[in-house]
Length: 251
Image 1 (cartoon, helix red, strand yellow):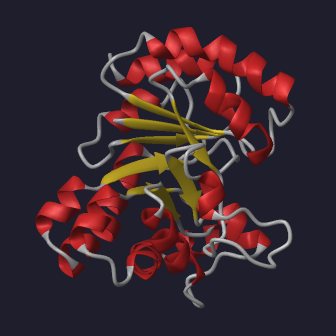
Image 2 (spheres, helix red, strand yellow):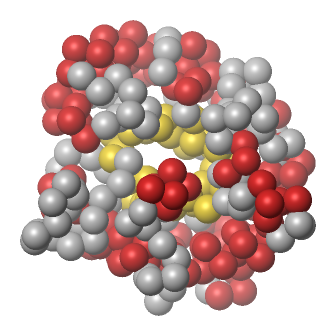
């Protein structure tokens, strides 16, 4: 299983980030049988990379551009992340809403390709809005997002990616999808789409996470589902309680 912590625009000063990591590090390092990834703001990646260098805890970025360099003010290139972290979140609904990430213009697909070229593992996010959920359009929306982002990749490349199903209506709202609903969506909209486009082995190999108001209280019920390989955790990753959450994944 893989548990990724998305700090978003929190713990953004070096002192805040170091304080939080020191509170988490020893507890997380004692937990075997689970991969843990911390995705802090860009401004503290280098500092945390140094602190976690001898740790089992991996680092991830929250976004990136697809070009290796150029006149893209305010953007971060994949070459800047290589060596600092192993993962990068791509296509998060908040990035889609704020601009710069789209299925329609191929931007997300270019980001995925650029990440893989730098040996970064994409954590590819997909999820439906409240309206799409109410209109029973979840399977089509999520499948379309996943296939657009992975378009043209080889099966071995797809197998190394991580996909996070994050229903937009559950992010930061305190209202998570039910484990059964999340499991069904991942099985039908994600794994079946990957199996159809590539093959069953690839669909079984790719790790798929659930994200959206994941807490210490509900993580075990999500991890009990056969299609769910982990979680993308937001607010619950910003305190030492995150250690207890990860602990419930391994028993």
